[in-house]
Image 1 (cartoon, rainbow, N blue to C red):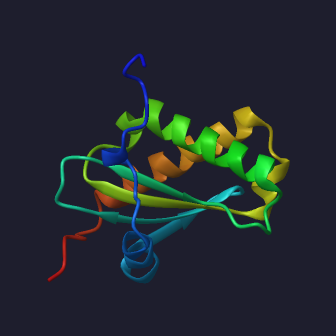
Image 2: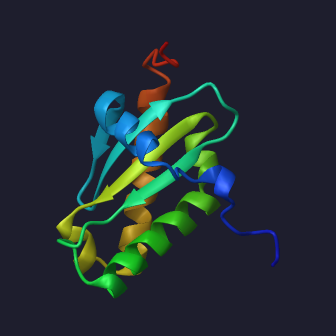
Length: 125
């Protein structure tokens, strides 16, 4: 491996983390994704990707997840540190070409960064 993977430390893995973001996180969206996100006190930003079966078959779902993770990995600097983000794919994401999907993820990350500096969301008790 060339050291450019997507380590577990950069992923949301537990159901409780996804539920926390859905219940108490902020939201933003564009044509392809809804993002539930929250500022954290850690020095890492982590990503989770949710793609329902309603979006498409396994090949389509895996393509969306792969592109979202790769775009996040290569553009983490757009986001900064200390964010947990869950990208939820919309049905329209299945119809977008790879470049458009990647652009949509980058757009979401930039939007979160802008809104993150204006909110005082910290870890709650």
